[in-house]
Amino acid sequence: MISKKVALKVLNECLATGGDYAEIYLERTLSNSIMLENGKVESVVKNKSFGVGIRILKELRSVYGYTSDLSEKSLMSLAHNLAASFTGTRQISVTSIKKQKVKVINPVEDHLKDVPSCEKVAYLKECYQATKGDETRIVRVQNSFVDNYKTIEIYNADGPVAHQYENVEERGRMAVIAVASENGQIETFFSGPGRCAGWNWFKNVLDYKAVCKNAGEKAIMLLSAKECPSGRYPVVISNGWGGVVFHEACGHSLEAAATAKHLSVFSDSLGKQIASPLVSAYDDGTMPNEWGSNNIDSEGHKTQKNELIKDGICVGFMIDKLNGRRLGMEANGTSRRQNYRYEPVSRMSNTYIAPGKDNPEDIIKDTKLGIYVTNFGGGSVEPTTGEFNFSASEAYIIRDGKVCEPVKGCTLIGSGKEVLMNIDRVGNDVDLGQGMCGAASGSIPVNVGQPTIRIKEITVGGRGGKLE
Image 1 (cartoon, rainbow, N blue to C red):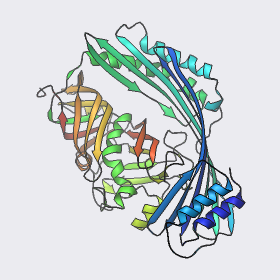
Image 2 (cartoon, one colour):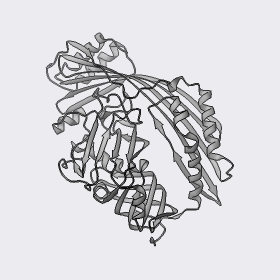
Image 3 (cartoon, rainbow, N blue to C red):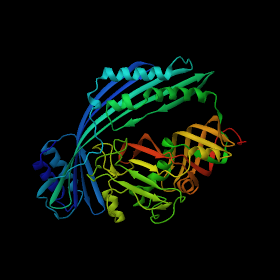
Image 4 (cartoon, one colour):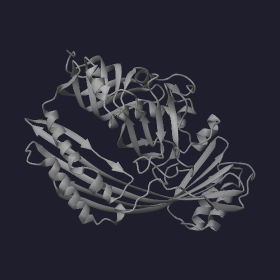
């Protein structure tokens, strides 16, 4: 998107006042979004965007700026103004640029950007019919398909030889919102599978009709659900999207953006037990074609499978370049950003609790009285303490080892430390669920995941009295 000659001049301008690292991040994005409301086309939006972000590091200080003007004059001006944030003399002169090979872990053959809008509309109309069917209690269905094709070029230098990386990110996501109503009561259910994949996956691999039908059925089911009881109970959390509890309550607290500044409950936990010995956990950006995967991170590092917890012991953090300096550790491929307008920082990709040895059916059978949670809605967490509350969008009562009636208004309240230490069963059925994670470097696609687990006791909030 810019020549090596221009990149060389910009990098040297960045380093003129003593900076020890300079980075140019260029990006072009093609995005398409189609939405249907009750089977009728509500919007078809196509966007193109491009821009560049420039970052300079000097020891533990960072300065960042961006522009959508890719001319040499604009880039040199931005680099000059950013460099003026530091006072000093040049320590590094960049003399050459070496292109680095990027291994493709997310191959896509049938690009979503090439699929005609009319074909996507027809697909979403099938989704609508699968959700609505003949059910009069389904009063609203919103179906959408979003795809994003991003080409990225990175130049960075902390010595005389700069490195150049070229990368492509492509993702798609189908989403459905089903709204059911009866006797003045309204219930909603959401599902949104996504993947770094082409049209064939969404049409022929993903069972999209089953996903949409399930959303409608769950919204109707919630109409008859009773209020969830409150108290301290065993809670079984299903695989896949249940991993959002680990993501929010524990994952963010293991990002170097928090641990390096002692803003995390786990800042000083390396080598210490923070979880049940049954728990091991990873952040893995290398899983082929998964929603949170990338060929390289936003700093040009290869993505990795990073072990965070091993048999209950904290063994690693997710580390970006700047916070790695604060920790005295190397970056490990977890630096991410929404787009060129954001400075990159350590973020999760595909984060999950590893499978255990238990049969998930046995975990249910061995729970005499408790709550079974299979899906979550909103929630909040405070990384410095790990305290959280999560609302379950789908939950049931467990009685005598059997999943019984559904309940609504279920909230789990606790802390990351409490959850991790109180896990006493871990299933062998690990699965992933797709979502968007918002933080300092914007909103990014992430997978959350886990097998079926049991928390032996946690506070459950609800308006249904005591569980009996």
